[in-house]
Length: 456
Image 1: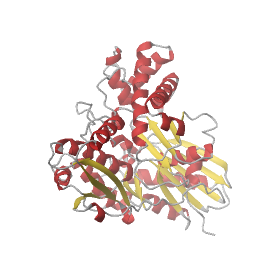
Image 2 (image 1 turned 90 degrees about the vertical axis):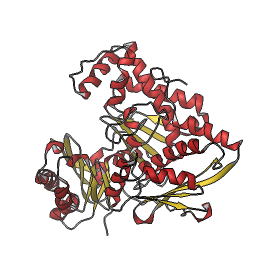
Image 3 (image 1 turned 120 degrees about the vertical axis):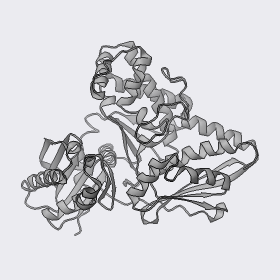
Image 4 (image 1 turned 180 degrees about the vertical axis):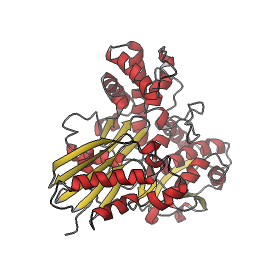
């Protein structure tokens, strides 16, 4: 199926499938890609490629490069192993270094895992590191007196939860992204938790949902602290949630990415697992709950995962890469497609205001706005098929301001149409949801409160 307003869209799922079919008919070789993250956890991906030196080296590289990029931003890691092809290794090695085309990824992963990023060659595929990708039970604990804190970019929410029932909650506007003094963030978080604590006889555990990347409850990267200097980040921010929790009491604390907590809330509401949550707002955010009902500790940063193989696709200003999810599943996608649909929007408006213009047209059944949402739905159907190469999915929850109103329904319908026509086996296996009241009955801060286990 063609993306109506972007016919040049080249879905990754189809490109990979076509590549695999052609490799089957040619001289081929096996390769293994492994990505190592914290605690010696290893994610691996095995595939056949064209044999080195048979005229397909560039093609091999282009496909493998996109897959490595995907593995890194889905699973996370500071070390990539490439086994079975020195030719492919040499190209990837040149990409992931200071001055290379993937310098952004190199720096980001080095910071998150506090190790210099590496690309390592392994000659024999049999010597590649073995898969070691366990998940840990986290969440769904509702016993005792708990604080659940949800740190958003424009407001912070906190709940006091006693044996699964919310006895108090509040939502406070704050401005973390424009404040450079970490005291502002610390005091805001501490005050919220103290307020929640005052509504319970005691505090047994604290759970935190927050945008960013967290390793062992430490803040590694988070947009909430974007104005804080690197020195202050190291001194005052990295352990902030741990330090705040100590002021409340010597109780278990668990910090998780807000996308994962959203997926957990959805899984708790649906009373099922294998849930991928995708929020389309300022960017594309995601979270995942696996078949055991666990949060995995993967990065799930789908904003940086390529979904369009077309090298002429729009480039993300931050990472400097093309065809990545942020330009397909966020307000940027709507703004990008508006002129192609024949909609003129005042250039002086903010991105959120530009989105609102299109949404207002959609609520009035404007055919041009409908074309935008159908195009995004086409992107999404194909991208779910691509994501399913890395996630075992039964439910996809679609959230965020882009999916609100009539546009979200059209987006969902078109994604389902793509899956039904192009990936019928996958279509039978999974369901797409825009959360209704039933799916929302477990709130974000309540799900956050359920994160830590109380040591009896």
